[in-house]
Length: 154
Image (cartoon, rainbow, N blue to C red; front, side):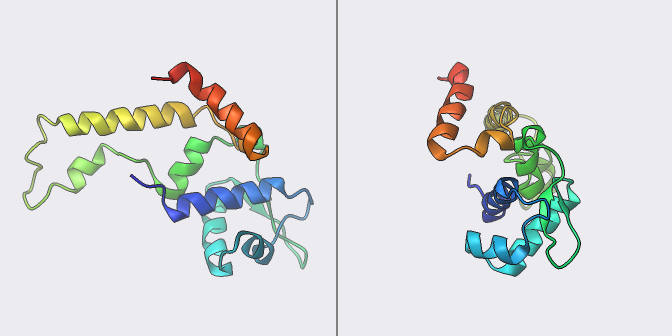
């Protein structure tokens, strides 16, 4: 399993917007330059984030993007699903049955149980993380994330 570029950069763009303190917002060219991404790619990701209700655009020459809601109300699990979807969906087995009409393991699949447990665990963790939790410098964010994970240590 991999985190896609769209998920990574979409989340980075959302953080960049959250860290920008001007009420006019931050422009696509400014995001593009600061993140080292093409303006077209930033435009694609900001559109996805705007359509999902995470950011708003401000009009005018000095317009740009601002958060649509406070950072402490932005759930990272939901953002990641908007940007790339869940790691595992129950629809996977229906949509990718192989060469047959139905998956040969549709009745008894221990692998499906594994993917469901991984998805459940990821959801449990990411549901506890907000955009606000990621705004701090890495060392502070890391400590906060470790404290969230601690009760779930194996």
